[in-house]
Length: 127
Image (cartoon, rainbow, N blue to C red; front, side, top):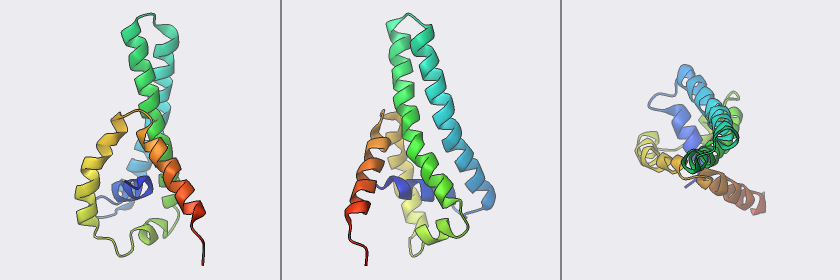
């Protein structure tokens, strides 16, 4: 799964409206802030093992939003989203990534995939 493509397809939706792009950017950014903040609070302010485990899960899931937010910021530049999705069957990709976005609930999954993808991109020779 390509996390950058996930962010792009989510921002595009069915029509690629400017409003949707802003809403998705806000969702990804707030996902990082709220999930990590609430998770950290649960880890420090509660004493129950279940609460702390939930806090740790929230932090891990919140960290999944970090690469999505980063890509959304980059794709918000004029022409960047259109360039990312040039020649892509967005309807097909939207169906595919609608299921794949469930990886957000697996702590650190998207963060690890994004780092892996960036390492691969940096290793490819540029011509």
